[in-house]
Image (cartoon, rainbow, N blue to C red; front, side, top):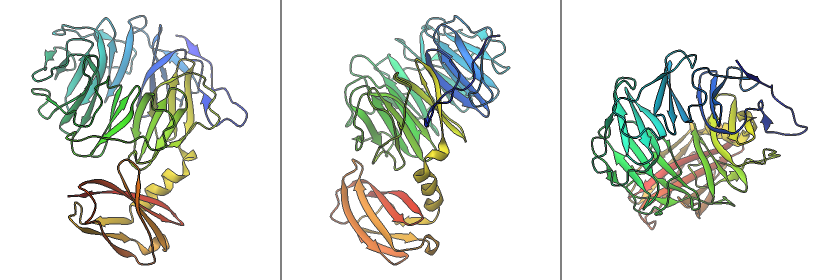
Length: 386
């Protein structure tokens, strides 16, 4: 078993190189286990937050491009050999391609007892028996070039590439698909990510788009991004991370209404391919290896989580006005800012009351962001104007 070197420390660096795992492309985390796909090697595993890495036997030189974790099982997708399954944390693998008519697997996703496999040119396949058999589920999927799949409850979203790329939705385990492109670019969908009821789409050149109504409508959310050439997108709790070609890492704590740089002292020097996050670190994969940074270095996000539990916005949705109810424990006065989903500031006021009524009757119908700023932090809520 090959073991890679331990973490290298850089003077004053907030990002650290976690072992020289070369050419990392995709990542997955389960509890204390971090799996990374490495070009030319297969899959590497760390059980100590990236301090050391080891290769997984039985999966090397198989052209692996992606990996997902489902309980005690691992599924790996290959660029030319289909799907591999491990029941023992990657110690051994079996090939599970029965029913697949395209073994170039571009993405994998779990939805309940089903695993979905996106392919390069034959659409999407589903298996309900751990990959023992696969069935094509492409009714209504007019673009068979699948780039990414994301799951939100019973909804499955598929991002496509080539020839009029777009987003498709299935609410019945892939039996039927509907195209949802209102407001989106006709470009390859690089990545899909989901946070609560919000669906995010990342494009290679047009930045990030958001839908808060199951994909019926989309809006561009690039406020604060100094580079819209997106490389990766990942949601973790209240935080959304994205990586761009030239300026590396950005973070949003308010559903993409604003983005701020999270690239302090970045020393990677390569385009980031993927993120993975656990309770302690955010990990970034690039051609030079795996890098990490402590989640605790995002103080504004931690404050937001503490404050949000003490903020109520009602009624929501609203036709003309709503009330912001701020717990007295947050030490008013508070500054209230209302922005549209594109990040444009529409209204600002200061209050010394725990309850504040706000008139939004003149606002067009849509999704808006409320930020309440106190000395204890910032709380962010979303409301819908009907």
